[in-house]
Amino acid sequence: MTTAAAPSALAPASLDPMSRELVELVAAQDPEVACFMAQEAERQATTLELIASENHVTPAVMHAAGSWLTNKYAEGYPGKRYYGGCEFHDRIEDIARERAKQLFKCGFANVQPHCGANANIAAFMALLDPGDTVLSLPIKSGGHLSHGLKPNFSGTFYRIAEYGLDPKTELLDYEEIARIAGETKPKLIICGYSAYPRTIDFARFRAIADSVGAFLMADIAHIAGLVATGVHPSPFPHAHVVTTTTHKTLRGPRGGLILSDDPEIATKVDRKVFPGSQGGPLMHIIAAKALAFGEALKPEFTAYSRQVVANARALAAELVKRSYRLCSGGTDNHLMLVDLRTRDADLTGADAEKWLESAGIIVNKNGIPNDPRPPMVTSGLRLGTPALTSRGLREAEMANVAGWLDRVMGAKGAAAECAAVRSEIRAFCGRFPMPH
Ligand code: DSN
Image (cartoon, rainbow, N blue to C red; front, side):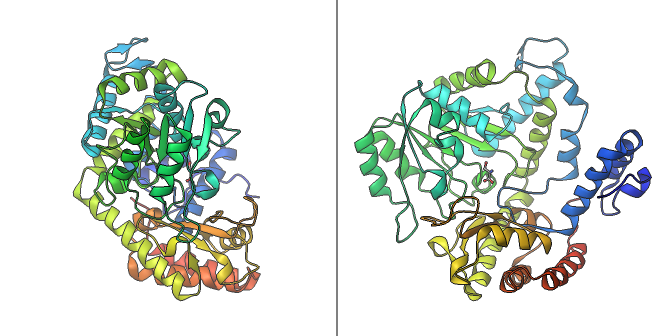
């Protein structure tokens, strides 16, 4: 347990100057909170982040999210607010909307959803009535809880039909999805996932949706940055609605976004975001989204996205060399699902996650298709390369990463081996600073 220290001693040397100032400012008022903020900065800087849904934003995006824009209520939309004093907020939200449209080449953008799940709530409300049928991939096969999990709003208020993955190939089986759609007659089909390592054929999904008169929603939360840069095919013009988070491969602040090309649907989406499901928008986060979208429009971000995928392929190949089976045999995007059982039948995702964290490698346990183990144990890990790539790691370093992963798991988390790997990773991280 760390105790309070002098404000200047709390800010790790690796922080950018504004973040150091921030820690010192918070520490002067509240050392108890500041000390944990500082330790978290240190943790991020000295560990390898392989959680596929996380990333490291630039200092500009981070500080916009922590700015005075947090002080304002701006319920409504640009030009139609319920509060005075919104002149500059209108400008910022317009910039964010315009950049989102440019980035994803579509006609309408709502930048107000507080997160991806909120974006999905508004999209469901815009397209469906309670009790309507939704066809989606369940979370146990790589889907998301907001696509129909029973305790979630989606599973509570809508009838959920499911499609799965081909049990042999662990790929989407479009013929089978078409057959289930014909049987269940959904009003909405969802594609886009949290743990699917392969390319999604959006045109094929639209043809299935059309064959049963359903809407198609693509939740591109994971692959948004790849889509924006053409590294993964776009859901436009196929999907009626596209939802996403802004903080994964897109490398923006934590938040949601809804896109569409249909003016009627876009009007409904706007109403269902506000006043349908949210109150005041988080204007500091919308400013940070505007900045992140601006970054994503630059050629450097296309190079970054390509490198994310190249790194994922290299990491996948290094793991296969070390006897790990990858679900579906590999990856086309930023993530891979590792079946630990081929390395060691007793290895569980839960143990691996814990051991790796002690060695400075941050991952999440993840069920693999048809996993015999429960969700809090699992037989797999989901690994992603967006955050490592933001620190400048390239293909060559993926061999180091796979080597450390394997040493920790091969030693079954033995304390001495984890400590040795931890100190190697600490030194290695010094060569790959956080975005600054
Ligand atoms: N929790 C996110 C993920 O890790 O994929 C999805 O919301």
